[in-house]
Length: 225
Ligand SMILES: C[S@@+](CC[C@H](N)C(=O)[O-])C[C@H]1O[C@@H](n2cnc3c(N)ncnc32)[C@H](O)[C@@H]1O
Image (cartoon, rainbow, N blue to C red; front, top):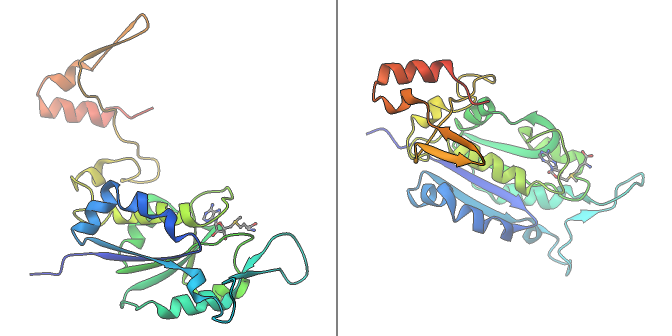
């Protein structure tokens, strides 16, 4: 029997506690229980100099300027501590990185292991780029850290592992699944009619018809606005 596809995520962060509530709830909790994904959180401070009682992982920028920079050495040590699979990819979260899209998430889901570095402060010492395979951005805005991007990357990539999303066919129908311009059709559930102020909002009749060909035709012609 072919081996079931699974992905391991190793997330390197100075805020290891922020992940547990989200990853241990939601579909990601079920995916971990079903061993479709594995998530390891590594506390970067554990890789600070042993002699440093403050467990510092950042320092001031050479040349001056605001803020602090994450140092090369703790990150190099953290990465060295992670056992790699054959198909591992090291990702740096970075606002200037390659934009995460559905297509990119699908590409990343072909790896067995994604090691994700969460930046903080003013970002990483530039030499950390020697240690990584690629930089990923979740959008053209600047967050205070890479933890939210790491969660976004983990969830959107994990959804491409067969079995993670309850109905796998949802992945082939949903928005962006057929290209960046593709938008899913409008969806309705009970009741058939709802009141909104003076308006009565009813479900399109065709969806109640039970005629699958007509429903498909309607869905092909209608997009969510
Ligand atoms: C305050 S940001 C650093 C911004 C950096 N000084 C700059 O101007 O590009 C700190 C960290 O948050 C993460 N981050 C912020 N915005 C992000 C985004 N849009 N996508 C991915 N990571 C982001 C990165 O890990 C980054 O190193």
